[in-house]
Picture 1: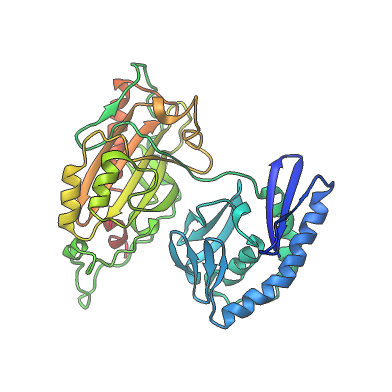
Picture 2: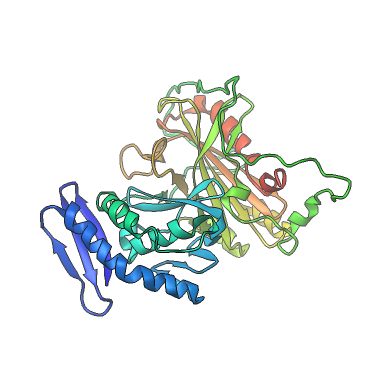
Length: 398
């Protein structure tokens, strides 16, 4: 039996039960879902969890919609993640996320409510994260705790991507709806460094170690850089004006991504890129009235000449890169349709060719401030972001 959970509003719960053959049976309108909901989850879990464990131990792949599990790794729409690299799993606003190498990333491209038997998957991840072996010791905790949690947690939500974007590019593409004054960011770097999840520097090369050869980054056959957010995006960066920006969310997409259009999409496709890593940053210690959001995209190509050729043709001020918002917190409302969206903001961005990679950045004020008075701070943010991304993020610390 498959159980799909949905919450229509704060006062009404709906369960859809299916055996995979007949039409789903909808359970709706009953009181006390906090009691019978976990009971349904528990019964299904007690039936399917032992089967899933046995399948994994036999070397099979266990599928949960667009996610699957093997003995060695979790298979997600954005790539294969070894169990040893996963430290946590969480569910918030209907979206499941996993913590990989100290970075949170979405588990799927859809909501939890659309994954069959998510509770079984949740339990397996809890058991196998960090490279542990699955066992039956946690069943009581999951049924008694997580199932109750899921009754109230599985609601709509997720990373939001919009299709349109104001101008960007190294040739200073901009769009302003009207001239309005903008507040100056006050979030300069403090004397005491803030905690961050950056990787610890390694020791200097010893006489027995060969120095890193940056020319290996020019071709995919020699480039050893992992195509992940942890390897290509810094956890934070500080601009020349002293403003610190912290990473708030990441995503991995096919290249060109579904939300990219026009000339950008055409050129990326002609360059035959396969994947793209994106991150969104927010200025630290700021409020909505002076907070700047920065989006970085890192795109690997087959070799440096292909990346350079594509970069040279990407038009300055392209409107088609697409924009990204965090799941929650600063900037999360910018991707909403209608009033309050990013579309009326003044945006500044740069692009860069870096070995076999193209890097693109965009910056805007969260309060949608527009006009030329925003230029110094947006230029400062979007240009510094170029140095916070790319293959040397990984090789400078490994």
